[in-house]
Image (cartoon, rainbow, N blue to C red; front, side, top):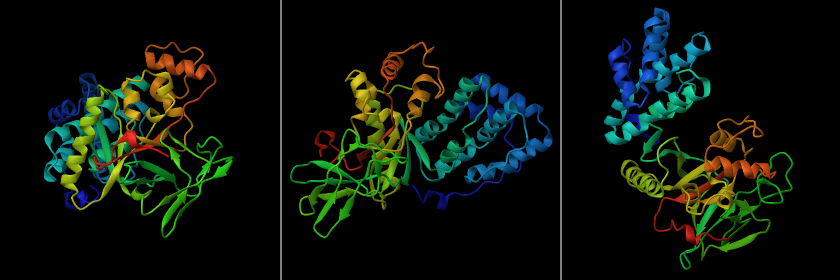
Length: 373
């Protein structure tokens, strides 16, 4: 929905929403009651010039501009950011309504505010918000939550090209040229063992194939253009998938989310050619298929994707599974089966990595069982 902002009006309210309105916005966005109370108490105590600053910064936030915050101690700055976002919830609802976004999607999109305010409390022990940059995507109509997943329409410039063979229904991918790789086919920008190659010639494509489990093979293959059709280019328009915390990650919820996104983006972007969905996440690490049950929700999710390597240091797995990338694993006591399995993996001297992955927008060719080299 790259062009949607062209028809969205800007709002320049002369005063902040009332406490009653802010409370209502907080409830709409799923903000915990205790957090709403803390935010309103903060508002009642701050100086008039801080309130004026908040009013002035609303447009900067709504336009995704850089924000210069007033000098406040950490606890007050976190509350200030939360108050800034809550004060704009009505603009989010209005923008969605003007471009015809269904109410359930608006509420789901706004629920990320509550998720990140809770995250701030979990990490800092205080209520507030420390991920303001991420939430700019929601208010600028760049990001929509549709069911279980969030989507951002953009040109992602991923590492691969994908091809479809109509005779065999097989799907394969070749990497872009010049990707710095280790001998095992994973990315290494600092001390690479080799670099990938790719050529688009008159009658064929030549390049290094990407194994569907997420690594580049150190050989070149030839795909004849009479047999293989390019269905995803590295610079195509894609729906970037993000996975908000909380809620069930059941297979049917993910399927419903992807199918609803296909329908909604086809309706609102009829003139755009969207090639697929793309994701870069610790949840796409193919190693998870070796340590988790085959019917687990995580394994079911990653098996939807044709995987490819990305730049990664494995820290996202530590943060999302254990709560911090600086966790002391020698003293960590696992509370979930996922934590237990991941801890055992690390104790064996192994590491984790992020992977990228794509799913085709066209359901006629979106068949993971046909992924091949």
